[in-house]
Image 1 (cartoon, rainbow over the protein chains, first blue to last red):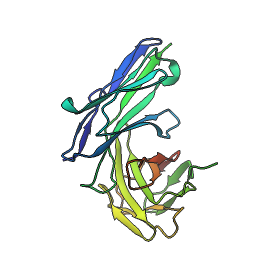
Image 2: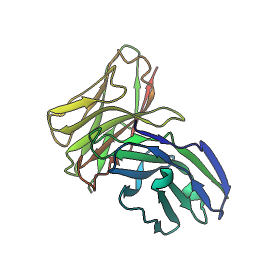
Image 3: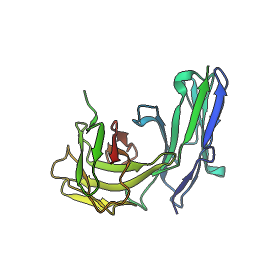
Length: 116
Length: 114
């Protein structure tokens, strides 16, 4: 089965606080890809990062960082020193390598509100 | 500019009418996708196409139809058979294969049935 779970439905933080968004995935494929997308109030999903299953190095991009752990099937996303512009819904997604063609599986999203 | 366009941004439909949502991309992507998003829910796949003149049903294809006559275009028709069509519809495109495959999204169409 292919599945992505984002257990945190809504999170509120005060500006400048750090926040971590959790993502747990399920797949039997040995090759797969994980993604994070941001959906601001305008509605368009904005691609943030792609990670393949063979690369467990953590990645940092400015205030954003991602922690990929195959042992726990997690791909968590941390925003450091949050800003009001970070307020959005964030989706984690899984693309299995071969078992289901090119289909992506999305979590239900985490709505982040950053309070000024 | 390269990207994905969807039109219209807002669409109102009377019950019993078919409506067609437009999706165009100039990214030279082979694959295109249609998703439906309901409030507080994730994205659910309606249809996808990996190549011109071919498409497959996703998880919730009933009441929808698509065509892929051109690489750049993947219109979605919401038919009267769709019982609850009010939702936000997102179109995406991608390479479709390979380790660099990523789906890129359009701005969406918000459909409301009156």
